[in-house]
Length: 366
Image (cartoon, rainbow, N blue to C red; front, side, top):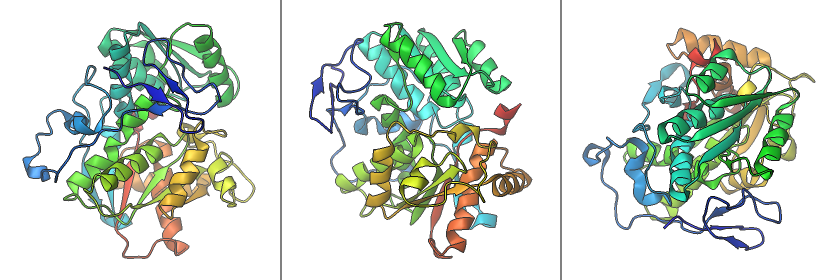
């Protein structure tokens, strides 16, 4: 049976089904009632059957596998120039980590008997949801900014989803999408609101732990827009800690784009770069994250932080990544750039063990 939903803020519960709400009546995001995790010690990586990709960790997931390309277990590689490890999240089927959430979200849609999904996105999440909807045989409307990159628009169109281009800000795109959802035009497969998406992104933490012999790094530096990977990492490591599989949480350090840094602002930090904003990192240009309060809670619980990066640092780091063989899109450069800032500021010690995800392919910038 599909897991029911509840609101952790007011305690309201909602039955699972194709007409389930996309948020609580009180306005807060919903979560799954079920929070499964296995008993006993985990197998070492050498003995894990990883042929199912991230679904290897099905015992942790409140969703059954229905829609998959066997995605996951992305490489964790040494990055000597940064004295860190990079997790190559850009080698997923659609070229971004958003496939983690798409496989679980569309599997949930199939569980519920949904016929059509709707999503709003700056590009990567939309392409991912559209692709997995095609795999599931479901119709999909994807609301995107009018100036969405052509490569991401084509990824949506080529799988026979319907892109809906919206003039205005990223928030205007969401508003138009929600109008369609509230009009009953489809099930909201939102990467920002739907708890099924976060069930998928928390497998990022499981993979890191397994690839490191069921240990955790000192810190993980991640880009933050709506915080889907950031919160997924927090939820995954928290679940591993609660299950007794790891003995601590890593510090979670966020990286936002200058001028689009509400989490940095909430922490009292500088939200621009010398008074300027950057338009380079379009994947995280979010001024009102749906789960902003949860992101701040994750930062507090892990002794984390968040900083904003300007165009010069992002561009310099992007060039450096490319020269080192990591062909990623500009948004990916924000986290490695932030890593150096955190070290320069003394937030991270020189010998701290750090993992940084590279979240989207450079092939998507065409």
